[in-house]
Picture: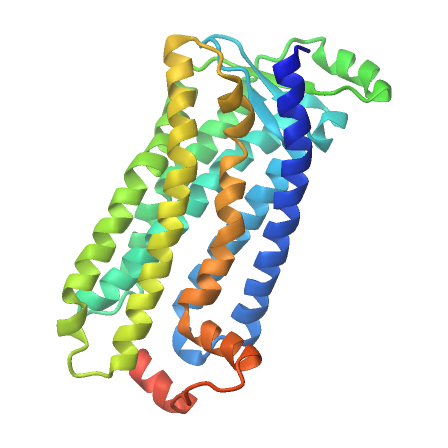
Length: 329
């Protein structure tokens, strides 16, 4: 390996474990709050927060286990390398994990966008989001994930790994290889193109859709709850602000490296920073997601303040809060 490649490997050998640890700890705290400190009025919002958290943790753990690198200097027979613990396993196994990680990462963004849509619907619509409306909305928002999962399965089955790669990897396992070539992809093939489009829409379209939901919801919020309490408005605005911040962080982490990835494919140019850090970008956002939720979901923030602040403003009894907030979760 050349010098720059070794430098990137050494950097990521520190970065991956660090972000795995911080992500697991922060999500553990959020999980404790979701289970033990969620008031009754959160209802479905609690499920959405838990779903996003589970997807975040799964994506981070798989990413640490695989630590993939796409050597995207060309469009045909592109090597996909593994630098994580998965390099001691069969290449087909690692490649399946890698493709699954892509779908789960897409599901994280879909969950955040759907949470904002949920708040938007509760504010701007009079009919409850339940029954067939709930089912249809879930299908619409998570269809890209389903399509990506199907394409990923096809890509794994069509994996163009050389026939003798399994034999070679088995021979090298005892020598603790630095990386394992877990597969090769033909990016021009139809399943790869469709999967790429699903990832691209999740990265480029979902953030703008989320911000639109927030803008429309804030525009109608005052009129919708004008007969309610200030606590209701504060709670709703805070949750939407927090989710929007999460989307923005993912937006900032994903777009630069994914754009470089797209450029490297189209121009058939190798960019080492993109190859090594593209898979790392979701971990950066996943670390901050639970911290944002703990701050912007008011019941969680009040609970934390009650532990660390000797003097805090008394809050209304939980029964009163639940009655006020049940209309806009």
